[in-house]
Amino acid sequence: MLDEIKYWDWKSIGIGILTILVFSLGLYFLSGNASNEYRQFKEKKYEDSVSGEVVKVKNVEHLNQSRHTGNNISTIAYKVTYRYSVNMEVYEKVMTLNSGLKKNQLFISRIKAGQKRVIVKFDLGNPQNSIIQID
Image (cartoon, rainbow, N blue to C red; front, side, top):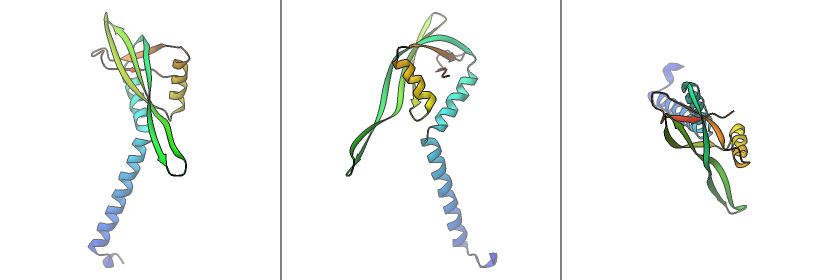
């Protein structure tokens, strides 16, 4: 039976498998899991921490238009601007948090409720590299 499968059949099977793989990877990265795992990796990598404060939170919005439901604006992420000080030098960074993750939503709700103090983890060799610790 394998002798009957021609070159074009193998090519079609290969293209089909490659298309499914690329589509699956695209969904994985768009779902926010990849950015969350990268953030967790950086959080574990940076061992030093300092107290910082959130300067502002900006919603990243997306507009959906439909003939049946009209316009719908939804928040897809949050841009959190934070400030911290290491060795008498002040740093200000922006971090993007996916709005689809429950712990990010809880973190943003605490910030909007007035809790501006956060723990910032940073790289001692290059304090400019940092990330907010989200519990």
